[in-house]
Image (cartoon, rainbow, N blue to C red; front, side, top):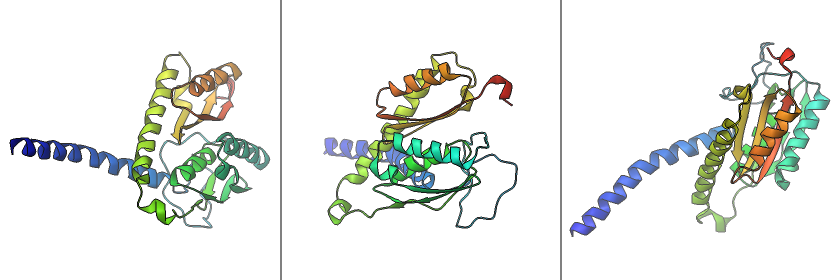
Length: 227
């Protein structure tokens, strides 16, 4: 009897400690999938053509680019994920405003695609939402939800490893680097001083334990252009 009571107490302690964490993780994942205004641009907010959400945190400095260059960076970034569903996403661009069309297999795939686009230089605003294909009946009652949670936790651990690896080097302007990981794909964006630093950052992220693919959205910005 005492052994049973002890087991019940231990299980209760685990559930009390784990459930709030899982709720927090899942809430972050669901909200990160929303298409939002992302860029710190002082030129004014355009009238939204579709339903928009609140601006996300962790903004990158805005860099104006022609639509042709933005399209190139977006298409290259989506292809670098090595994900067939993400590579098929259609993108419309007008003066840095992005509209997305397409369907992916999971929320994690959608979040990865949206992270690539919101981290692309020149993007002012993102409108629309990438659709997630409904799960098949046999998958609804499977353990897929628990695997998804495990994937989220793994991705966050990989992010921490990437940051720790880069912290070993005396790099300038690390506050302008952004690393987000979805499905073991690391999206690296921000500004670096030259190609040598860029190659160094990408190399060490690529060889971080757990990283499967790297999406390189880094831009080279010399000190003379840094504000």
